[in-house]
Length: 204
Image (tube, rainbow, N blue to C red):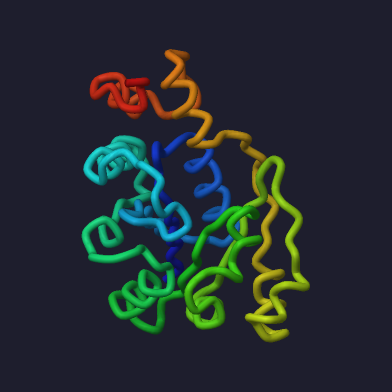
């Protein structure tokens, strides 16, 4: 069994997230992609996010007609910061050692991996796959040697995939909504309707 784990604030989830998740799944023959909205992303400490219930519901709406994808509220309901190593350990315990676990990230997140909690243990616990995206950052591989061994760095490099370059960002969507501009075509139609219904991201 090959399972993709895709974490993020998803504030809001957008078409780029879905396109990248499907592309990774197709490249690696992944049969389940579990989307994990984070309650308290450590790298976004202090940043105001839409409420957990709103973000979970937007993910639910976005994937309603896609059997490949499913929502997990594990990171939304557990206490404390949403550390990736803890999430991967949870799914390892849940799915067993026979499951191949893939943690899906973008190149911008890979560049910051050395700051993640127990980065070395994380690389050993799953396969981190990095999806290509527009404007992706240069990866400072020389910095990784202070945190990871050569084998772990090689494992990260082998997990870099060529995927569609989707230049959509949740920050841009929130900014457009706050200015009263349309975010149609950036998010699934059901997510757009939900944002409008609940007045999310509008300027106050």
